[in-house]
Image (cartoon, rainbow, N blue to C red; front, side, top):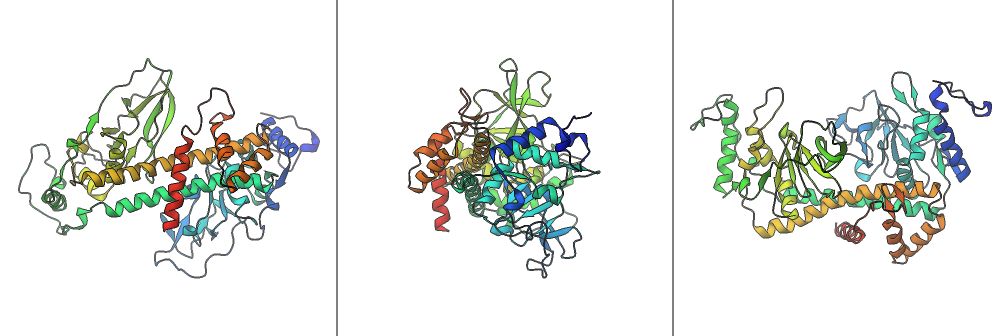
Amino acid sequence: MFSRVQPSLLTPRLDADFYKVEFISNEAHLKEFGIKRLAQLIDVKASGYGVLPSSNEYCEGGVPLIRGGDLSFGEVVSPSVFAPLSYKDGKGTAKTGDVLILIKGACIDGPEGVARVKQDNNGHLFNGSCFRLAFTDREIDGPFFIAYSQSKFFLRQKKRQVANTGISYNDEDSIHGYLIPDLKNGVKKYIGDKVRQAEQLRAWAKYVQQQAAVLLPAYINEIQRHEAKSYRAKDIIPERLDSLFYHPDYIALEGKMKAKGCKRLGLITKQIKDSWDKKKAEVFEYYEIGGLDITTGQVSSTKTHTVGAPSRAKTKIQQGDVLVSTVRPNRKNVGFIVDSVTDSEMVATSGFSVLRFSSLAQAAFYHAWLRTDDATAQLMRWNSGSAYPAIDDDVPLNIIIPDFEQTFVDSWGQKLLDAQFAYVYARRLTEAAKTLVESLIEGQLTEQQLIQAQQSLDDGDNSLDQAILSKLSNEGYAIEEATPLFSDIDELYRLLESATQAEAEE
């Protein structure tokens, strides 16, 4: 492969990919629009890596470690790894308001791998796959950069600068040289506020789920755990002859729950095994276990061609269905279908047991309960796997659930349903922010339009904001016959108001 390049465009880089036409034209377009270098927007001395903590203020196990895979959807996922202060790959500490960006690894040129550091992550270590950006104006440029980092104009730059000597990476000079659109502060605030609103919705949704988890009973914590290595079973059923099925912990949990008036889950839900019609469309939305986000409980789909569809694409599903993974139930792999895709068949893999409830709120409530330790222990009791845990698809129907009062189910079911929709709208707000950036650069929007919308919002009028949001779609801005990004903007405003109110009450 080769590229013909004007001598004036040559740099010390001699690899052909660096001079692809799409990369050169992308940067030429940005320069014509008007740009600043990233180095002009950050404190160069404070960016990069920095000083490691001098003392361990967290726990004896070490300091939480942020890795590249922990940077997702503009926020830092709670680190699951702790590192000692002597950790050799610890490169610096994260500071509230700064941005961490992925600079090393296989997904370096992807849209994720960029996140703002929240108060919860202040002082955490980050490793060498991350690079810290200390923006001089954290409130304006930080959130705007998150939006811009998702755009095709930034991703092309990032991909162009990738060096590969066995491991793909961006060096410090190329990071400092990134081209950033030179926009007025009012424009960057309007776009950045979409990122902040997404953060607000995610934080609120997480808070609601945590509140519900505290209120849901945990009978497994009330039983006396069996410590001996051997035990006897009083009653043996023909279906199960493996000893683990009769472990005293499982027996005690079942007895405790039955004493509290618990009942079979199958009494309030039904299992769905409807096959989908392959003749209805050329493509369908495919829901696999790999698309399940364990943090939120949502399942993302992949648009898949009907011809040559995977043999495991079996069950026709719909909005509100709860998907219980039949493999590795110990990981709480229980998903909830929040969105409804009206123009495509929605199909789940045979690796899910599909449960359907009488309402969306009831489904949201029992989705949350199925992710509790009580439910997980019962599912694991029926494990029949060898290499890794697996259960039959009818097992979820046979586990027992607390006899909740209907008012409790209705109330918390609606709150949990709102939380699920908050996660959905948070993703759409991030997409909206990205689309606004691209539309500005491509001339479909003007800075003045966004400045006026921001001024109106400051005055308590959201009509211009609503007009702009209503024209956004996955295809871009003001694209005829495109599916709107926000099908119900009033619902977005309602959720934002709820999140703001909850934030004020904390």
